[in-house]
Amino acid sequence: MTAPTFEPHPHAGISAVTYLFEDASSPHVNYDSMGNQGPIVPGALHWLAAGRGAVHTEQPEGANPHVHALQIFVNLPASKKMQAPFAVHADPAAIPEYRAPGVRVRIAAGSSNGIHAAHTADLPEAFTLLDGFIEPGQRFTHALEPGWNAMLYAIDGPLQLQAAGQIADIPAGSAVGIGLDATATQAAALQLYSAEGCHFVLLSGPALKEPLVKHGPFVMNSSEEINERIRAYQRGEFGQLSEDWLRNSRQPA
Image 1 (tube, rainbow, N blue to C red):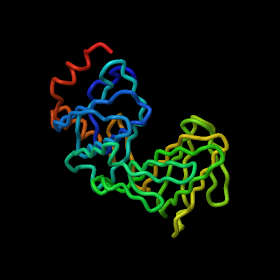
Image 2: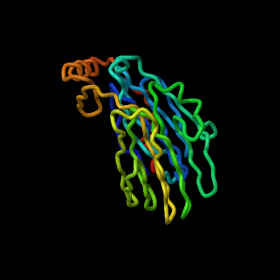
Image 3: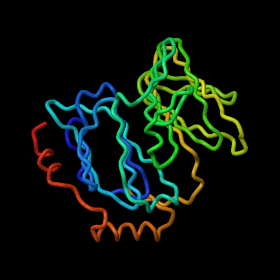
Image 4: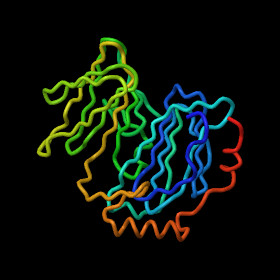
């Protein structure tokens, strides 16, 4: 992104997660209806747990902005969909790294190889987000817990995944989903290999195994709950942003 793209919009029943890659050259500025406002700088994580409902927007700002980021929705379990919204922010210095010869992995959330991101305790649910770099001919292994699913995304450069005796080649710009056998009781080793070098992202979390109904940025467990959240938003219960975002969105890019 190089300019404001999204108008303020609501979310309910999910977390809206933004992680800025280190090669972004400008901040992505967050505004939300809880009064949070500030930059998400390159290498930082911002996690908005929308719960029963919140409004937000995020936009590149500054001179010649260029934001390279990952923006994802993480479903909330039914028991947390109606909790009050809140946000968790982790600056780059708070994100630990795993290092080995030819391998560097930023643990933006969760844990890997015995290294744990402390701010994960503040998230609404267990989740792992890894931002990794593998040099040509090197390998990285991550343990996927029983009951967890994962997605592996090769951002820049092809990647090979070996898991449970199967091998999958992932071209640059592609992703694969990973699920364990439902009866698995032990963690599975996900072995990542890159012949040419690769920047990758690994997302993983426990499978909720609950009904899922979506309507735009609302994700609940039934159509009735979706309709109730739409009415709540229309009544103004999600709040609104300050005028700062509007003033800043009108600045020339």
